[in-house]
Length: 282
Image (cartoon, rainbow, N blue to C red; front, side, top):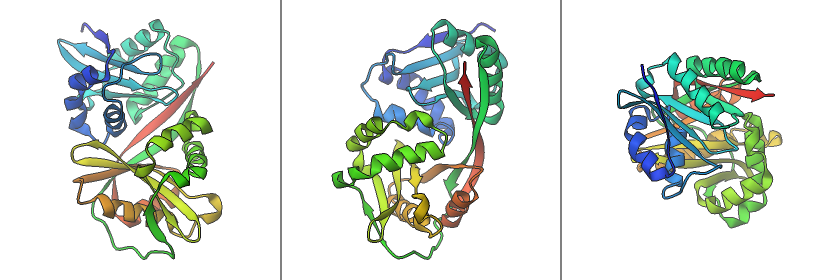
């Protein structure tokens, strides 16, 4: 099988080639779809890799990475291909693209880690297993004391710190730069929401990535406020706010965090599948 590696210089051309394929499994590809939406009109460079692997004129593997975040990829229709994984690794090495972390379905992500480590002589470490949930039905939940509200520029005194802590909890060290988080959140403050009592005690945001689907992310409660249902409250109210706008709402949750999973299940989320993370070191 002859494979062809294609790099894209423009996000819009990349989206034109792959968006319809990614939407066949919008839950698996929510992060790529969301990133494509946010980066419309942008060009690729050292801070962005956009690529596909094709065979017989058909795209069989789609690749996205915007450093410092993890590399993401998708086998069209979930059809795993070992030859394509090897071909992907060879082209990443030839392009001098240093992969720090990946995320994908459990089978292919492990295989990528093994091949990439072997060919680069790096070591790899298994990271988080992330459950992908979809909101089945918003259930009735007893709210704790407090109120739900949308964030504004005044909340920048704590949101970047919480975002760094969230990335640390999720083993996404690439997001732990405070300046990066401040700049990122200052441009999208309105997508963040909090539950607050006398002060904010939990946060979450809602990101659009397709015409009918959105994703809850950055769900975080500082350690000294945990166990009081604040995260449940902010997630429940966030979902209620956007249910009329989107057909589907989904999210990722750490499989090893029973408290978080109970929170999402209590709201009404149902498990779809699990993705795995791997990181690489010299």
